[in-house]
Image (tube, rainbow, N blue to C red; front, side, top):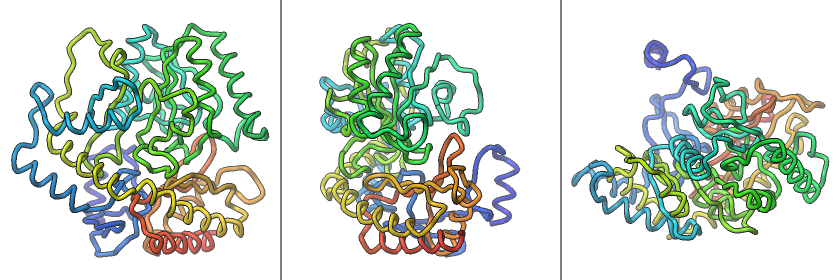
Length: 427
């Protein structure tokens, strides 16, 4: 491992982050478990950053990839592609967007980049509304709208970005308000902001902020925003890269917690749909998707082997009601973690829904972030056989817990016990 780490450091960028004091090489996985190069077994509560959505080495996906690779791996979007059409048809139906069109990319970053291209072209505006504490990817345009300093390495951008209140419920100037008053205050802030600028192209928002530490507004905030946006003709882009496909349990899409005024104009997706294969994409009304007046293709977006994986993975997810499992098992897990956290003065909040759970850590007696303890909990959990993630923005630190949606009750109990032990040992 030391040799591989040294080789990594010699040829890869310094800013390419690695978890753990002794970085981990994962060699294989099965179900909700992975193994490292030394043969150690871990319960995986992070799924390759919410990407292994159903299970490691899911037989249906493995078989679909193998069979498709035996026929043809790739041909580009210049040719008809049956698996791409079939997956697009399924996603269009599931999106709830009328007359939906689907464009496939290779990542969530590229999906959000495409959504920004569509919105700014359709609206003839390069101004974008984004949420504070947000993260939308690492491309030049996606970095330019990311409201999280830790993941924004440049102030340069092709877009003018204006940041809106509301993505973080328990911090900021409106945190002390009840949910109704919180939403009203955020809406008034949005109205005031729009009075100082030319009409923007779109609002882009994660229903649950992923990298920001699994924070979210009260249900209905984006529906209330939508009434204001509609008055100006401003589009709503829902970034479902981390929240889509039933992860939140209560809903198939995160935006459905804010659906009083209908679906978004544009939805972006990625991560879990491919269960590890590189799939991203955009769903939009046809008039928006078709607004480009120049040629465009995707060399690798929609390639046959990834589409075969996506079809098999989505079918498995729907047939086995993994959304329902996320709701049931996730509900048990979050209550178990809240009970453990009640004894810990360094846990400010346990939040989330379904199998998307955040534990915010602070220095006891303060609201100050405790990133050192977050790192220590990661190490302690790994030592006991559990992999988790971390995140946060604007001086916050949070543990991120997002297992595959097939997590069993027994595995949830095992992981919760390890997390409780890790928290106790780092107090």
